[in-house]
Length: 115
Length: 117
Figure 1 (cartoon, each protein chain N blue to C red):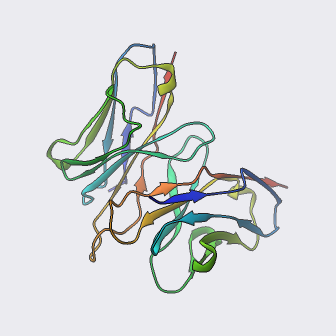
Figure 2: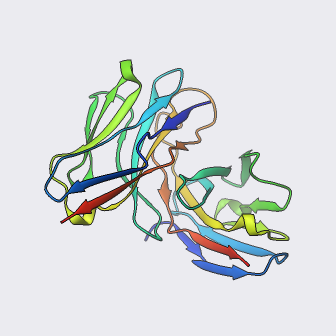
Figure 3: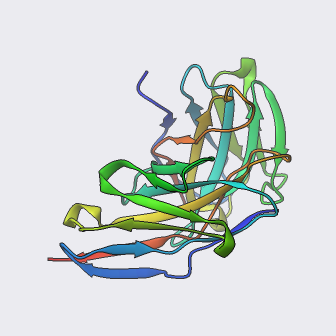
């Protein structure tokens, strides 16, 4: 079974600073990987996804993520954070081959943006 | 289509009462998922439908929980004899089967928040 670790519960950055949120996964084969964002009291919105091909993927709102197979990581980055980016961010993994297609989510990283 | 719709958005109930949540997925999506999210945690998988067939159930889904998806359209999640530990956000998501098989992202509704007093 797959699993996801988001080692940082909270991240605080200043507006305009760069951001990197960490995600490590455990899965035996090539996974499908996702980053979602959740604002308070809301559902989850997809930021970006990786299925295959180029390991650097671009998403909405200026976010990007890089799949590194050797490190089992899929870290989310943004060069300049805006106050509206404050939210909860979830990394998720789904099996790329075999098994039931059930995405597993990490516990999330809460992003706090200082003015 | 406006996306995945869930109702009610909020439900407050007393311990021991039954509650039911409804999810209307994106119309062309034949896969439907229920997740539960408690404060400070990520979504945890509860159950999964392909059309009207319930294909997977998590061990989190106790006997007090039942989910249905009649005719492969909307789905309901019922919790009987609610307990305070059932307080959570219940999220529904749907997806379509990709052209090469199981792939694709989940599209989430805004969730149904349950508070059990």
